Length: 362
Image 1 (cartoon, rainbow, N blue to C red):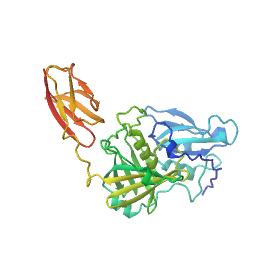
Image 2: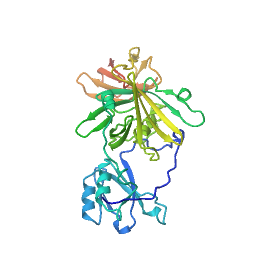
Image 3: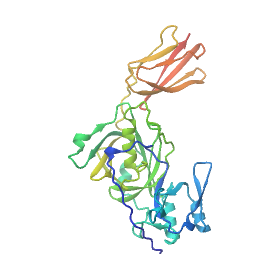
Image 4: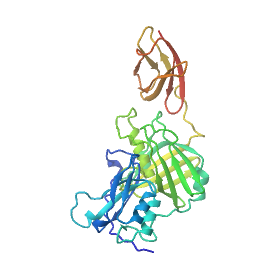
């Protein structure tokens, strides 16, 4: 077995309360290694699908790179000109199998990782209780809270998820790979989606192995004022946040159909998210009291009894042809002056449920 050692880089622990305003969802995992000889640094070729191809002077290393989806490769400290910082490189990838492959097959004289034979990433068995409690189920986010220094407790920091904002997690265990998959069964309120595989650690800990977010919405101008606050908490705990200064393992607990996920996210700081089984406690339909108002001879329509929150809507005719597909917020009005005269339907959706209204454009 090849022996790998690396100086441990200092890590700045950033409290979750000071989370920076960066894109909150990253399309990759990352790892850092040292390349002492500049002649061993691979060259980069960009692919059309957003991935890159790494070409090493050693063909067998190039062959390893070609077996995996790689999204980026860069110097870890681009402004550092002196060694050893100038010799560290970060690789962004989809699956930890890449790191295992490189660690076991590339000599440390070429790529030097911060692992030894006991700490190299390994797929381990997930506790059967986790599988029994989560497999095949969907949960929705109820609340979040923080604990830590200064007397922070869940009793004085808990925030409930806004009623009209549904964030769902779907769990499925694959016995052939021994990985637990967590995915978003629908686009999140911020416009993101993700697909993540985890391996076991202990009876109440799992760690990320594979991450494939499908959409990365970098805009902070969303119709949900608390959208990014709750989603960024979720991504920090799941391990797909762009902030790399986080602990590796996610903690799990399950009691009376309530799921709690937590992680150390800063110095003496722990962040908690509480979920409930979506099939047992599906949030109520709050579209029942909403009415569509179509003033006579008006070029605008609007909804009555709509809360000050965001709703998706689509206008289509009797043939199913879609004319408008957009978002409405609170008491906003919808312009229909571009629609030809005739009978139309408008489908309203708030992520919990849908309701269809009809109107006539005169």
